Length: 211
Image 1 (cartoon, rainbow, N blue to C red):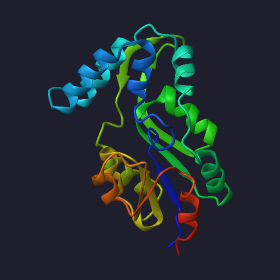
Image 2 (cartoon, one colour):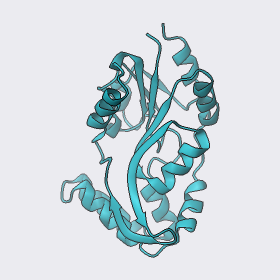
Image 3 (cartoon, rainbow, N blue to C red):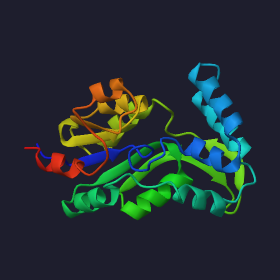
């Protein structure tokens, strides 16, 4: 059956940096604290929501315009724009699903003309960051979100494709009929996908070869 919906992870798949949090930390000189919070989450000492709040608190008072300008310097993965244009030409809607945050994802969705995007929300008053985040897409929590997305669009898993790069995307892979690993971060991610790619340039051809 032909693909009728594509769900993309963002960081490491569409944009080069695998993590918008560490990308901002590098620019603001807060990498040491960010790494400490990330280690605490990965070893189970804090929840993902606690990790997100701690990161957001570091950036409190920063300019929204400055944050968005920094994130725009994160390069697109090769083939991203051509793939988005090809999907639009074929009338295949695509959704961005990210554990990152809206100040990054919303610009990408607008740039690529995605049909929708789902991510966390870095709170601000329109000018400055407030030091808090609403977590809608926790790390590793994409499976139920993909399931709900297919349900609301009345699509069967067999006509849906998910594209990801990390272990957090494996639960999303399991909810659809087709899964691609782009720049996979581990052998486990590659093994969970139906095919792997070094960038996005070959993905459209792969989609076109589906029966």
